[in-house]
Length: 139
Image (cartoon, rainbow, N blue to C red; front, side, top):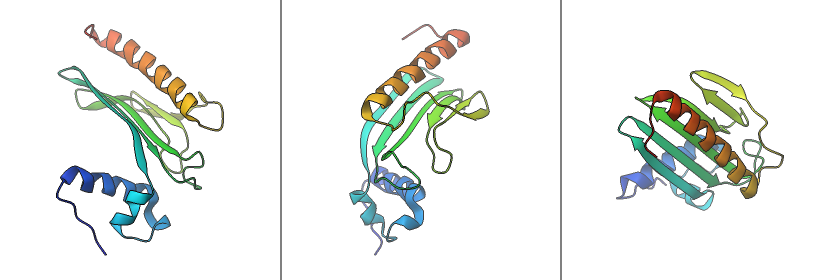
């Protein structure tokens, strides 16, 4: 059975969940509503050409997400991702900075809400430094 919702943002949300879980679910898009819950969603337009996106999902613990969280923090400038922290499946905790990708161990294991708060703070500090380098002074 295939579900389609009138609100396009829900369909996009389901598409992201499908890409995160793939064959771990029964294949119906509606089943994903029961599996993941967005617990943080922050979007900030710092400057006409600089944007910040921070999302955290509570997901079932699995081999792909052993901590039960899926997160993605991104800072975009002029359409280019200058900085991102995420735990995309199979890669674990890693960081993208100016075109380079590297694993990081900024977190004590296991990942918890409190550790996500610390990670968010660290990410925002790096964003502040990048914005200063770019000459963006408006908060």
